[in-house]
Image (cartoon, rainbow, N blue to C red):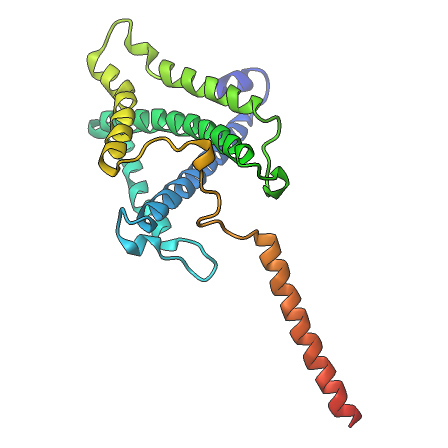
Length: 234
């Protein structure tokens, strides 16, 4: 892109391309650390990991889980050494297909969430956020997610490369193996819409909480001012 823009007459196009790459990297790093830290935070909170990872600061931010994710960011340094570049590429490919599987699952879960909400005759107005164009965007994202998952390693088929094929598609069977193994071990299965629990662990609306706190502070300040006025009048 830099060469094409430079040949077209934009001599400083390299700065634009570099800036776009930098913004893209920062966005990807930020979202990855956010998703990873929240995943291991809830993983630990549910009893599947060290409790220290479920600790939060006074603002409710899981700082220990975030810094735990920072440690793994040093894996990216592997890409600078030729001998370990192949291993790094394997990690990137696995992470890519894992992301497609996760976001496809999120879209499916959202569909089932809304179905359970309506089956239990709950008011949609109670939801603080409603996805626009529901459920069409969900169907579109599921289609794209499945498509990208299947074509993730399309270059390995001609000529067929066994090692890269396994690397590109190993997570597909592994995902279902882990899923069914979990259900078998914990004696669980897919929850029916009428049995979904929308109350346990439900967090109160943050706007309402903040509003109540501000109202409480206002009442305290008003009370103090009234008492001071009374003392002055006396």
